Amino acid sequence: MSGPSTYNPKSGIEKWLDTRLPLPRLLHDTMNTFPTPKNLNFWYVFGGILTFCLAVQIVTGIVLAMHYKPDAALAFGSVEKIMREVNYGWLIRYVHANGASMFFLAVYIHMFRGLYYGSYKAPRELIWIIGVLIYLLMTATAFFGYVLPWGQMSFWGATVITNFFSAIPLVGTHISTWLWGDFAVGDATLNRFFSLHYLLPFVIAAVVGLHIWALHVPGNNNPLGIDVKSPQDTVPFHPYYTIKDGFYLVLFVIFFSLFVFYAPEFFGNADNAIEANPLVTPPEIVPEWYLLPFYAILRSIPNKLLGVIALGAAILVLAFIPWLDTSRVRSCRFRPTMKWLFWFFVVDCLILGYCGSQPVDAVLAGIPLVLVARFGTAYYFGFFILLMPLVGLFETPKPLPASISQPVLGE
Image 1 (tube, one colour):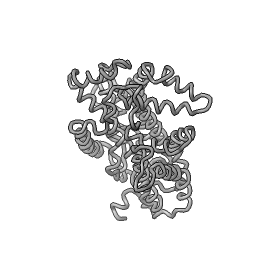
Image 2 (image 1 turned 120 degrees about the vertical axis):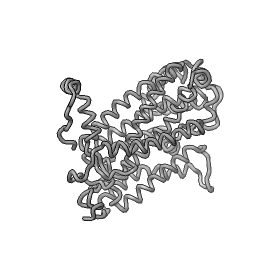
Image 3 (image 1 turned 45 degrees about the horizontal axis):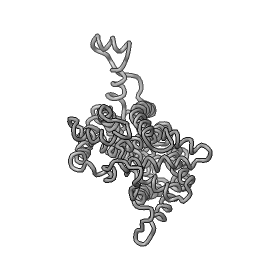
Image 4 (image 1 turned 90 degrees about the vertical axis):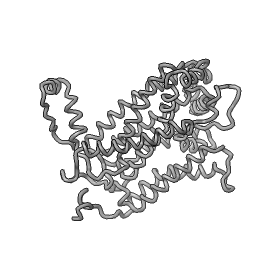
């Protein structure tokens, strides 16, 4: 996609470095002159925003780890000490805590954009699969991090989630015991989760590198979902998209800062301000907002083992989307039926999130929410397993333009 390198080292130092470790050439070819479709819209800026979020989480996490004590007797107090006694500790912690929510908000927009514009279709299947792997790693990292403050919701959330593994036949109990490092959630569990929470962001960073590498082989998809036909369809990544991404990154940082400075506990749970107590169970145990749709799927199935299977399948099915979608047209802009089904899917995810946030016996307008969650779960899996393959076979797409430039030039 990018073609031969156009980098021309000018100074003696650049020439010396280029023959030994060609980092300037790599940056030049992947940032400055990389040919990018000229019709990328606002929804394509979230890749850069996600890179920023990852960097923020790693930097703030390293600083927090310098003061945090992964000990069941000291963890809660160490977090309070960070907030009150460490210089700007409150700011670092609030940036890290809210940064997780910002990270997931950006990644969900990024994923929905990929679904809408068909960014998972050939030749970009591997880019999508690596992205699903990144999401899995993010989910695991977020769960481990949620346990570290060692408040009531942290402790009981860890207890509930790790107990689900015990439903797996033959090996379930052994998996739970391995995760705990003991026979119940306690000091050993906290140490293990702290170690994994510290390690996994660096694994994510490495996989993100693979994700970007895989992207630069076929190049970016675009809102029209058609291949680049000529150099006229592209512009260099710099300065066109570096300026555009930078502008929207500033807006995102402002949005991020509003939560950090004016509503730092907006995404938190009041029970987590109470130190963990194994003898007192909170009235409702719920995960963070970005995991609520999957929590609703888990609770909607009365059988514990089937619920765990559905939870795992809800994420793993994403990796098979490139083969489940049988349409030859990428973008939903030209797929009238799939466009409506996609927006129903977005609404379905929001409904599942709401159901997951409510008590299991909650009722809305006389309808038990668990029943709503079951319909939502059915549509979630039906969208991928039934609708995607069938609609791709029977839908009549709109005519595709001959090139990216055609809709603009009117030729």
